[in-house]
Length: 220
Image (cartoon, rainbow, N blue to C red; front, side, top):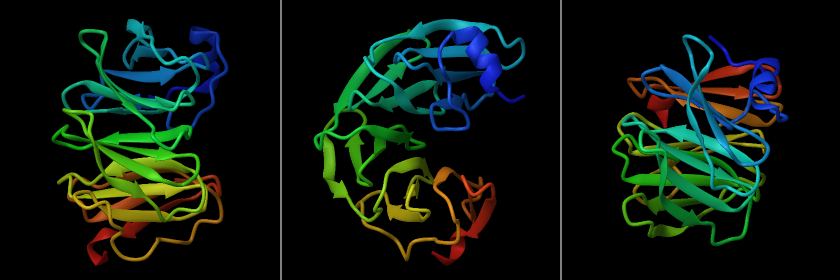
């Protein structure tokens, strides 16, 4: 199953840009979420392709990043410079995390234990929060020179992997926010997707250069 641009345009009635970080599948794979150009987040069944639940509304501008937790929480971030945590089952916003550097939010991720949220910004910086209290953790994470369009945690939650318009990937210590090793370079276009294998040994990246690369995470 793959959500396509034409299919989503028919259902949402808004301009949709795929592939991008403004769509996400639940961990169980029963439905997927996609954001429209007005900031609403829609849910569709992967079996029937029909609307699975009512949309979530609250963002007042385009949503660029979506990420599900293992327990069906959803994190979103976008052009309104906010990151939000939603209880999907209850269809309500749980908490809001303000971007203190007044930057568009390009990507988001939530740790496997659901206690940490990270966002990537248009200016290449990143921010971590305590998901339970909303308190920022440490300083802004710096290293990328252009927008951070992709984020994920490793399965054990100890590392964050980021992909950027600067064509590189970076690995970070999630506890300290400090980089681990050198940037991963090789793509000739912006990196818009990153994923880590279940055993944490490999990182996959997708780029606008039309390639997918697999990296050995064990050497980092």
